[in-house]
Amino acid sequence: MSTSKPQLRADAARNRQRTLEATRVLLADPGAVITVEAIARQAEVSAATVVRTFGGKEALIDAAASGLLAPLVRRARDLLSGMPPEEALRAFLGEMLVFQAAHHTMNTQIEALSLPATEAEEAALKQVVLDMVVRARDAGAIRTDLDPVVTMTLIGECTYAIARSRAHAPGLAADYLTVLMDGLRPRTPTAR
Image 1: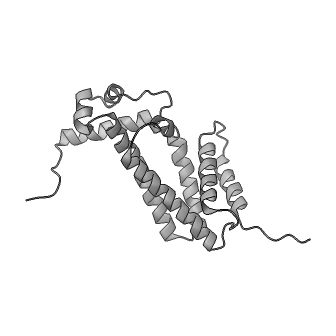
Image 2: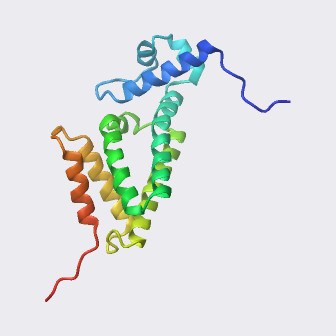
Image 3: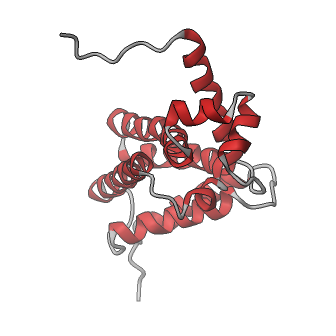
């Protein structure tokens, strides 16, 4: 007896991918009302195909949103395991700005939904960012007078605000990262 999942037919796999991509497009559109019908129109499939493939709108949104977050979590882990913590934190924050600029409307689109896979990816992302902050603190690269959770929250909220800023000045993201990382550097004692 085989325990592997049965393979999707080529057309079913194609429809699944088109439906996921259509959902991601709608999640990025602040004016979109996400319904099964809207997703089906965007994907150019029938509403019945959407329901048959995913079982309903919330399951589809969960698959789409968690699918966006999973590579971000993997990337954060790769950075943390492959470079010093301060460099990993700075590199990841730059990548997070790009991600949030492209997907910042997703938060409002999904906030009232029960999305277990997305919530698991969000928890994993928070944990890896917290790990970056703790390791950077332990290495003496960032301040120790701020609680790591407060530092992580500060980083997340500021990054989100910069990512959705309408002032798309050249260099805004780089300037933000410089100011943030400078502000997180350990304080030097002042002479009295």
